[in-house]
Amino acid sequence: MGSGNRKKLDNPALEWLDSRLPIVSMIQKEYGVFPTPKNFNYFWNFGAIAMVMLVTMIITGIVLAMNYATTASDAFDSVERIMRDVNHGWLLRYLHSNGASFFFIAVYIHMFRGMYYGSYKQPRELLWMMGVLIFLLMMATAFMGYVLPWGQMSFWGATVITNLFSAIPLVGDSIVTLLWGGFSVDNPTLNRFFALHYLFPFLIVAVVFLHVWALHVTGSNNPSGIEAKGKQDTLPFHPYYTMKDAFGIVVFLVIYATFVFFLPNALGHADNYIPANPLVTPAHIVPEWYFLPFYAILRAITFDIGIPFTDIVLIPAKLGGVLAMFGSIALLFVLPFLDKHPVRSSRYRPWYKWFFIAFTVNAFILGVCGGKPAEGIWVPLAQASTLYYFAFFMVIIPFLNKKEPVLELPGSISESVLNKKGAKA
Amino acid sequence: MSEDDTKDNKQGHEDGETRRDFLYLTAAAFGAVGAASFAWPLIDQMNPAADTLALSSTEVDLAPIEEGQSITVMWRGKPVFVRHRTAKEIEEAKAVDLTVLRDKQADSDRVQEGKEKWLVMVGICTHLGCVPAGQKDTDVKGDYDGWFCPCHGSHYDSSGRIRKGPAPTNLEIPEYTFLSDTLIKIG
Image 1 (cartoon, rainbow over the protein chains, first blue to last red):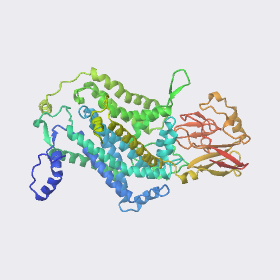
Image 2 (cartoon, each protein chain N blue to C red):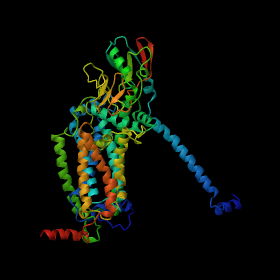
Image 3 (cartoon, one colour):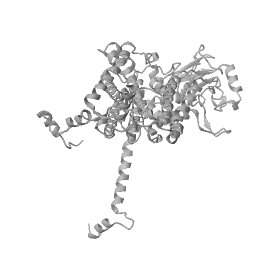
Image 4 (cartoon, rainbow over the protein chains, first blue to last red):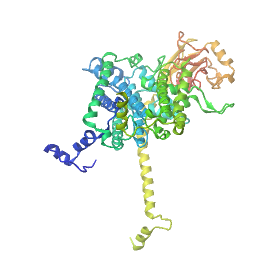
């Protein structure tokens, strides 16, 4: 971040600034001439799209907080007041509530992109891990945000999720009391969730900064998975990718706006328009769609794990489910160290490609299972899908490390692009 | 500082340790204890506050509850089920073979002696905290004539014991005392 070999700027005002704080030079270096692989496809838009969604969430969130009452007795009514009385309040709230969903859509595509093209591999391990940390922070933020309207789904979602911690042996109940600040989800819980919901997005901004910093140290991966070897393989970020990102962002925002204006409650639950009632549980509690795969994994462990042929239970079903759910995210975190295969992109990994496509389909199946009542066919289906989720990371990937044959790699990014064009001509 | 001391510090002892190492360690230890003792108030503030704790007991008048009727009262923000059990329910609860139970507890351990008709328990499913149905006559009472949790399908019997479904333990019995024949204090 030092000024280094700074070029003198023509504009005297900018030069005055830049010679004291080389911020103009930095932007020019990192977003102007920054050498970027020239073969990006549209999957590479989603980092920028996620950034736009983060900013949208922070801006709409701050103005919503100006109209929100953080007490259990007033929270629900204050949200309804935002919807009915506050100028443009309905728009701001729908932007925020649907924005959470679209933020997750962007981030999930971004993550699947990284997994398909092997972006997490050496030297980008830390970049990937900071991404998983952002994902974790997003999940915590989204969960606490969903509690704030203090409807039935808010209240019972908070109750079920905080009760997960009671599965921890010995200290579980004390931890749950600590999280609640009382003996049930109540006013103190709402207060602390609001405080943390306001804080966490700024932690996300900080980790995003580190994530982007690390990206600019290693440079971007690309669809061929081959490092750029020189000028012939790259393009300056501006105007080539500022334009491509801007186009992708506009398309994404069109879909987002369609939901905000025409289907604002399609991704929510009607039950959350009933004020929270600690005495009545809704018949079917489901989290927001972006948590469903993990919820399915949580519920898939319906059996105690113990020593066979004895009554001794080592891991009761409830704890087993919690461990499986957190384990499924922990595996993402260590993925760069599980996958040692030297080739990054699935384009040249004929086996991994299909296992990964199956993994993606499996994630959708888990999502569907998580949204259904835990009964009938959905239980064994969720269990089979959970098994594949874990097997993908713990069996398939390590197996492929040594056994998978590789298709012939092109010599460079340029070559891969030219060959493809040549073949079509 | 004498010349000898300086020499001692520079050359150190035979094993390469110096008095300065000791100072570093003590300073770090004091720093760690100081940070931890300051962190504790920041964490403990999340635990129930004095006014929350002050609301931790409640009295219930049993006189208006007819046989076969249940009421739900709030205690510590949670629902508490108070049921005036029928003779049939008491009989069913007592007749259960304890070995078939997941959480082995006799009915007599769940009610107070001589007051078998009063079943008082926290109305929160021990699985993930939902409120089971069964308080109203019209509710689904599950397969064991007690309570049924709609969230994940746990069945409780007429003593509030888990019989079927994912819940690990019986419905919790809060601490309560009979102040008189028709008045109890929960908590």
